[in-house]
Length: 254
Ligand code: SAM
Image 1 (spheres, rainbow, N blue to C red):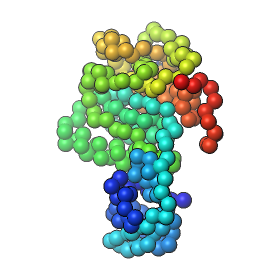
Image 2: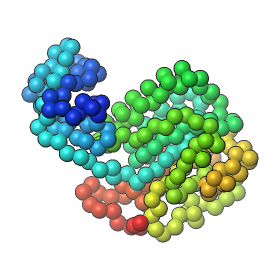
Image 3: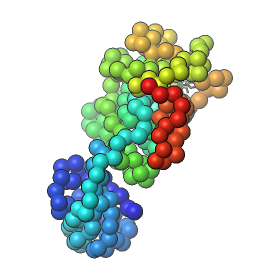
Image 4: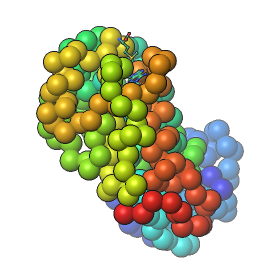
């Protein structure tokens, strides 16, 4: 069944006025007509089964047949990603949403190439939010991951309250398996450097903020690969990548 995210306040009503882009998608792209059933979601867990009651060029109306709340099944992972060059963050956001990252924190470190002024950041942010929403729609994730503002490394480190904090560091340090315990922590944060890596001083600052350096083995992964690899491993061990839909999670429990 087709599904669309709509602004949370819209979903509170019994007759839902569909946003312009949803009207366009239903009418022009999918060529769906009056009487069709769709799912509308607010991105916060509320889901409505709806019937399209009116659909023309300018306006779409849907009535709510049933509503319910869907919990987040992904285990909380905050990906603290140093801004990569060009549009590589787009890929991280799209794939990370599919893999179950719950918060994205883009950050600027000493060797980050992109420097965004306020205007460019606001424009990028709109695009990043669209990418997250589209990925969540495609992979049928009912809750949208959060996107934190772009921040300086030290601020991002200081604001991180995850229980398990790992810094991906290509220097001499233990592998991820040695850092993971047998019980499931409440949440995790994964810190990933830019193309040029973190400086030793930045790595020290991260250590002082409670981040344990971990190695991903002998191959140097691209910045956009490294975080996604670790997110997949963690979501498999502690989260919902290792379960069949509808079953409870085997393996380490809190
Ligand atoms: N400038 C570094 C070099 O040439 O040695 C490579 C940086 S790498 C492209 C970008 C980031 O990915 C690193 O800062 C680190 O966070 C992560 N990363 C990549 N490969 C890794 C590995 N084998 N172990 C741990 N972290 C890795």
